[in-house]
Length: 132
Image 1 (cartoon, helix red, strand yellow):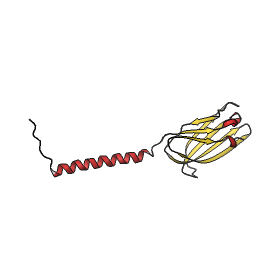
Image 2 (cartoon, rainbow, N blue to C red):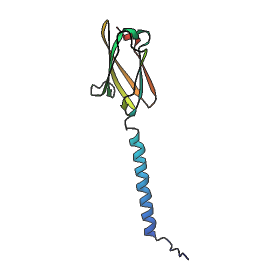
Image 3 (tube, rainbow, N blue to C red):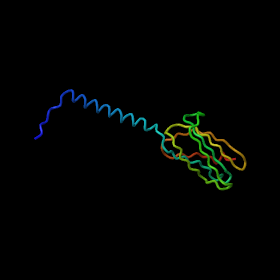
Image 4 (cartoon, rainbow, N blue to C red):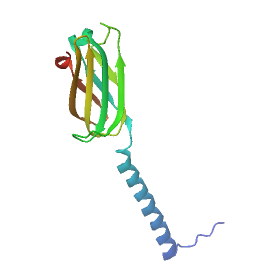
């Protein structure tokens, strides 16, 4: 036979305090999860200019107009073999970024600087007009 003892006001306060701490921890985790880095999908669209591209260098800085580069990537291709779309999956948190892309080809280099917002989906950056 089990005898149940009624909870005292002190026991109720302890239980309430535990639930409040747990709720605050879960709320903090949700807020911080938005700032955790995750794989973002970025498509550098070279289009019909792709055969003229030999290298694409991309570097990423958080915020608009920043030069504090967080991630860099280089993609090299044999002459005439660059794909129409170069896919990159940088590990970055959601947010606003400045991306600087240097395109090197048979006619020399070109630099494109864009402001993009990453939000966990797929982002395309059109570069065909910038290819030298």
